[in-house]
Length: 137
Image (cartoon, rainbow, N blue to C red; front, side):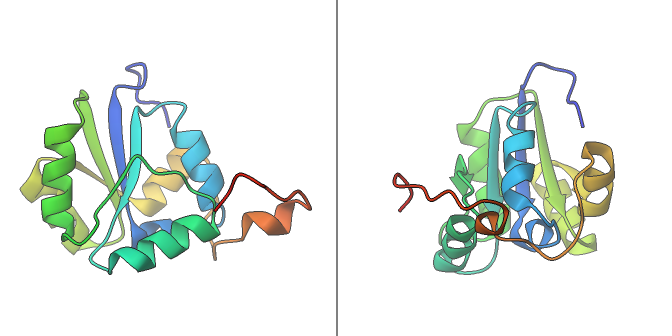
């Protein structure tokens, strides 16, 4: 997936969409090549998002915190100035949230196909390497 605008895009994943990708860490790494900002939004409590992103070694530029997805997407759009705002989600409700907040909506299946990301149960990055990171909390 190429935004075609030199990384002038903000990309937000709904946590449920991220959980449908087999390598969420690699997805974030790949998305950073063509996005200026990448993050996660969710209706779940902050600790749920934090636990998932830490487990998968995902460094996000923003997250929803204690707010809902609509408020989070609105706040992100106000704080991060880019040409495009794309929300990757899983269903019609996600599409409505994107439309209501002025974001483009992209179903996770379409995003995965365009970017060549593998769908499936998320794998732990530790399963791919014996390397341990001393700089990770």
